[in-house]
Image (cartoon, rainbow, N blue to C red; front, side, top):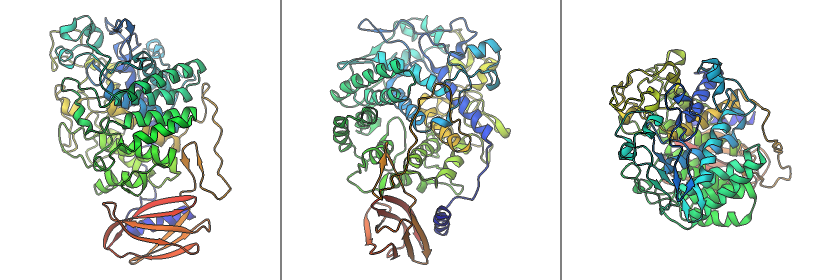
Length: 592
């Protein structure tokens, strides 16, 4: 009843979601999650197996990569090319590992991680897969984590890039075929960067490995992941900045903010080991992140600040010097304030080259993470709407995921992805590769997209619209996991680690268990003209702060009992933050 009353109050403010939203069925979301997760199997470098190379003459690629004599083969290709850029790869692997850890029951076991099930059945659709008692995303994450173990050679050597983008882009062939072309055309031996002045990439890799060190069911795997996480973090602490990569990834794109990497590494090492020294190191890096500089940006490989904000608040109760009304206020500035009339996050609505699909998926993932930590489901409707939009539930019936055509959605069919077409003839150019093998049509990669056009661009060469990348898919997979954890959870598969169920703290004090703050829905709010009537459901005194959208504190009140009438002094949209000793809630009011 309290939840309904609270949302009813928000409806008066013009901010509540509709009572129900059934744009896609549970099975639609399951299909999308299966496709977008398996996409990472099509990005595998090294021995593989890589399912998209099945049936070609060269089913493996780049198996002999070494740095100072050390084997560093493996990992994920960056996008539709065959270079491994750790800058985006570290971000992607951490986002996915974190999503798996927090939304575990939303990730299914639908196939076998070496893809022998598809080969045996000769059916690469969902029904051709065979469960093997390991959730699919975990198997994809293990492949990447095993590469990061190799990359973290020691505290002075860490591999951040494999390959040269200019050489790689000369020929439009599969990874296996390119391996044999020689260095000048992207083949072996490739350039390998192992000593860059980069703290961001090894930091993100360390964060991913630290998560794997607590979620992998295999004890020996957990041990090797934790050791490598500590090595990668040690490298990150001795360096600064981000690797520059021949114009393909410029360090300037990070806007001078690289501390997110080592901060998230220290955070996850603390969450895994409970070693207080990591909390101290996390605080040192957190205090150097300029959250204000990135507060109107969006979540991407080059801007992890909103994720750092969430993890800082719900792991350590850290808050930036500039008050954004908590982590959710920071998110609202990026996303809730940048929606269209149907509630879609569309701040980046430009055409080709804007990679606009990052905005709805990134916002959905971040709100999902906040919702899990804060035990606040009021954003669930918006999360579903934005993901459904990307899956074709929009006025143009335009899906942005290659092969996803449920409910009559029009899926992209000419992605900028070499492996998709199966071409091994170096004499063909990007637009001359022909149609893909039937099994590859369910690639599952989300394209960069174009929100200004009602139809798909059919040019494979147009990477500005049709590029598919590991970083594009990561928040989408994470948000799908959250949605399914709420709508159709799979509580247990054979290999899951047993995790004790959280129990509320009955002491009446503020409770933080495993980084999650409890009792955040503890207030009842009623709107009366230009005033608010706020009461505590737990009969606990509380404080109310009212901020402008720029974060300036304009009014402040303290309740003497368990209810309070607040008059809004200023007109327009305002941020309301209500705090008691065991709960915090932030929302918005438009005072006309």
